[in-house]
Image 1: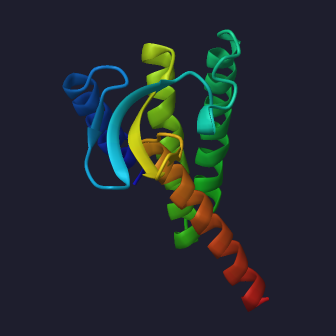
Image 2: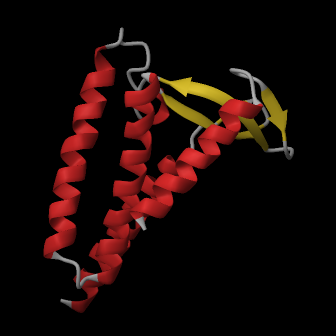
Length: 147
């Protein structure tokens, strides 16, 4: 599953970077645009303007997280929901890490909004990380109910 996330993430980012100019907006619906944005920070552009040190920091965090996740996957491979959640997070983390290493920023392009309020742009890797985190919570709640 991690490989599927990485491939989908990188293919969509390649398509967007080849199709749009930086910050070009293509309206799709009354609440969704495609827009090419570069995020030097973390989620929701956290520390995006921090001067450049964050590239190495977030790359290191993603690398350590990947090692921890692979270790957890090896130890808990029989737990299907837990493993799916971790695989989604791993794929997303590695997809964004590829961007950081290659470009020094993450490519974002999905822009949802309501009137003038825009959710920060995101990408397929971010969706996988969010879905994986949600599945981890669900898995944890299921285990509490069974106890």
